[in-house]
Amino acid sequence: MFTEEEKEAFYKILYKRRDIRTFLPNPIPDESLQNILTAAHHAPSVGFMQPWNFTLVYSDEVKERLAWAANKERRALAIHYEEEEEKESDFLALKIEGIKESPLTICVTSDPTRGGSHVLGRNSIPETDSLSTACAIQNMWLAACAEGIALGWVSFYKKQDIRNILEIPPHIDPIALLSIGYTDDYPNMPILQTANWEKRRELEELLYVDTWGNNRTNMD
Ligand SMILES: Cc1cc2nc3c(=O)[nH]c(=O)nc-3n(C[C@H](O)[C@H](O)[C@H](O)COP(=O)(O)O)c2cc1C
Image (cartoon, rainbow, N blue to C red):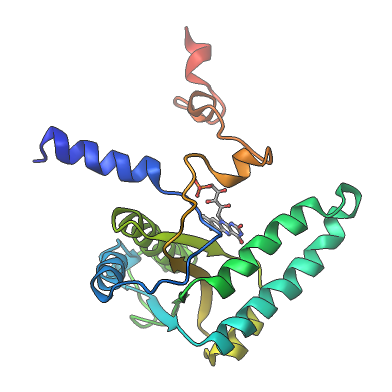
């Protein structure tokens, strides 16, 4: 079992972890990177299929092209924000700078064919392969935080653009682009909350008892 200090450290990492969009150019030490990747590889996965791969992108030229793909999508999304002076779209632009600034971008992919056609559990709910890969990414996020390293998740891109740039086969799913590196700006609160975009909902409102929608507070 874990000591009180160990438990405290675990929850501290959990609550301190943030999505980051500004990075310093300093390289990530090999040991830290290995710890982060090994943490990912210890995530749970449906039928233990371990559908993930991690493509480490160091090349400035390739990062430029990934940023181009994200920027193209940002401009497409901007149509939805026209009436709000493209505030949201400008906000996403920071993420694109993050891809170019950070010393490393990791493309995390999911291979739905790994383990053959009979992966236990995935037969019923096919998207459990992507969900398993998301668990791996969360492990990376927490491990990076423990290593004092920042990580930002980018998911606005057309998958086909990312496949073309990174030469990913058509059946492989590019789940995330992760910008990773040191930062001098690790906020205490989600950046979207500071920007008055969204705030954390009350947990109590999300808890139901016995049937969907039956709030615990209604039971008194
Ligand atoms: C599945 C997923 C996709 C995300 N995609 C993006 C993205 O495309 N752009 C972005 O700015 N942040 C993205 N994020 C980060 C969220 O905006 C961020 O996690 C959220 O605002 C809460 O902030 P926190 O992670 O600092 O607690 C993504 C997060 C998740 C879990």
